[in-house]
Image (cartoon, rainbow, N blue to C red; front, top):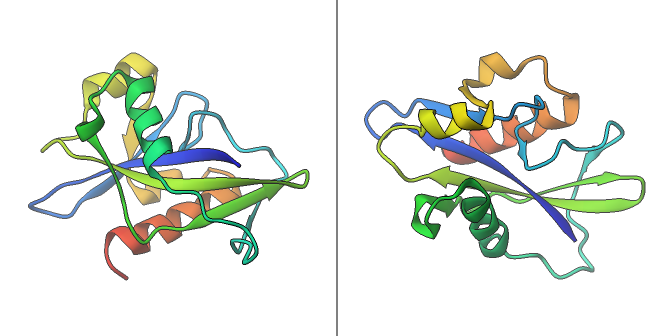
Length: 137
């Protein structure tokens, strides 16, 4: 199953949570979801994919050490487009501050949830679920 990773940073002192929005206006690294993608419940008859490989791939793609991004447990999401399911994982940057310089080199930026209102509906649904997971709601 293909995978995407939503990357975020949560400030340890204020709990301010920001998501990495890539240059192609998606929060799903490292390629936008198809336009017809919809959020679906994970299939009960399939083996769940573990996030470790996708998170490690994300760190490598960004030129970071494996310890610079951690999988956020408790987040489970799948989308479907054209009959293909895509697992979506949640990765947290572990540094004290968001890696703003890294984002700039990618043409990306960190955004609050309210700054993501213009994303496709499926990405907004994923971000709402991610935000609830991050804040324990």
